[in-house]
Image 1 (cartoon, rainbow, N blue to C red):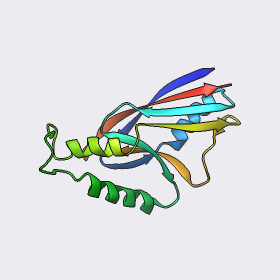
Image 2: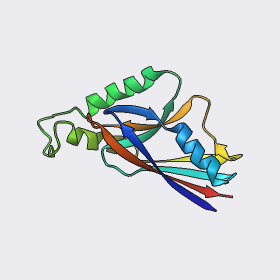
Image 3: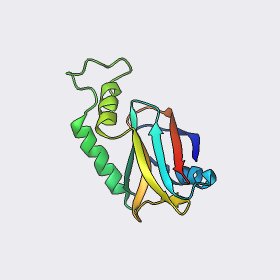
Length: 138
């Protein structure tokens, strides 16, 4: 059996948003007890990650690391059509992930105790983002 939903999220700018509950709701509504949930973001300047859900300093530190790896406004970038954060956002997306696969058991996501699913916005301005959740299984 397969079930699919598209979720929309309004992002206020660079940073993370916990989308675990929204994804878990899709899984619960699917009626699938055992299988996989595939989560995919339909954009090239944001990403998805599974990381610590208890201490927000983890996500702040990850942002610091990405800022060092892909700084805004680097003069070596050629692609800057939408501003100083344009190419940096694309690079950050490539360095992270556009899709995640999470096991489903007992009709729920089988995440660890301290794991959460996060939509990670890499642009500095507000954006609307679409996330496709596909649940496969029995």
